[in-house]
Image (cartoon, rainbow, N blue to C red):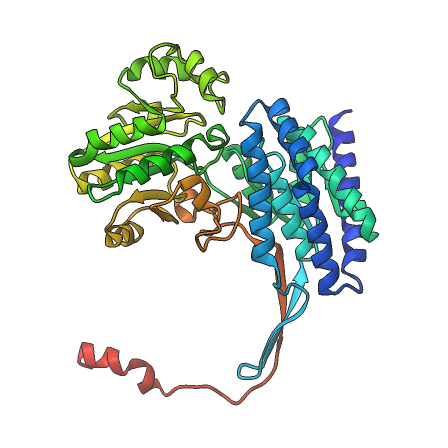
Amino acid sequence: MNAHDDIAQVSGIVARARAAQKDYETGADQTRYDRAAEAAAWAIMEPSRNKALAELAVETTGLGNVPDKIIKNHRKTLGLMRDIKGVNTHGIISDDPTTGITEIARPIGVIGAVVPSTNPAATPANNIINALKCGNAVVVAPSPKGVASCELLLSYIHAEFDKLGLDHDLVQMIPAPGSKAKTQAMMELSDRVICTGSQNNVHRAQTCGTPAVAVGAGNVTVIVDETADLKAAAQKITASKTFDNATSCSSENSMIVVDAVYDDFIAALADEGGALVKDEAQIVAKLWPDGHLNREVIAQDADKMIEALGLSGQVPDDTKFLAVETRGIGPDHPLSGEKLSRVAALYRATDYEDAQAIATRILDYQGAGHSIGIHTADDARAVALGASMPTCRVIVNQAHTFATGGSFNNGMPFSLSMGCGSWGGNAIDENLHWKHFIQSTKIVREIPPVEPAVEEIFADYWADTAK
């Protein structure tokens, strides 16, 4: 198939999506949108299908592990369904007699969703559910390694659609073989682009000419200060760092520990399976053998990762991840960046102020806007971080991977895509959620004038400036 045929194929897909969306919206009510979203959710959450999707994802991408993929598919989808249950996305959503404004929810149309190989079922499902909840059709562009998982997910969704009499064309994908040209065409023809993935994909999404909601890169740094519960911090960091073999953008990549508790924290980490490694040069040579991350290490189980790094017999048998001592930060020090593996950089700070300074330098190099973690008993420090660091989220005393994208024990919306604000080059600074899949029309009526006297507005200013 040549480039012209590729574009024609994508044009046909988007045209069918547009026709299906018009039918979906015509005569719709909230129940229709809710049932469609529930169908897509059950397609991935039904246990046997969830397991099949998780197994296929690991088999075809070589990333992560099956038990954690199953948990992720279930919890992320269940949490999203909790968040959108009862949310009104159809018809009149507000009517304010004071302002005279009535607001009517309107679908965007066709959503073009670009999704990564790290979560080849959970992320498309999240986008599809949000799109359907808000009355849209959606076309998914999976990464090459994620094609098989996306195909299987869509077959499950379409089977659920058949129970409701819904058009399969409401949820489509760019068929294999994928290409940049096909994805580009989809983005240009869609009504809104949602992009989670590489910075190259994000750049292309944000310059395609279609309004885009894209998210930035993670490179999570976590501070452990002298007031922290070290055992709890070690447990949470280990659980988070090892989940799905560190495929998440919210996985801890650097730990900054203040000197006063450094040795005690290392001991607590060892109890949880975090092995201290002091030979930074060996890790760097093995993890980036040709300047690129070693595929035998990326998102692999601990035993495979240890063998690929040449550390067999050099770390304890129960090792779950590696904490590599380092001091360097920046492009010449790859350990300070995202590693997509069970490897974390470990920095020793003289005190809390030094820890914050190190964290700032790391985020200035990579991961600005995404999130930072802190384990502390002093909540004022967390608030101060939020007021001064280039970050959209400060995760306090939690396992970062589970907390950043929404958890049942915090108030963040469930999502697999984190906006990073201006620091990360994004239009949004919040977790991607249903509000990014909808627009509204305002009915504007005349009301009694609300016009202040000039004195009301400027009295304080004049008093301060001695008018």
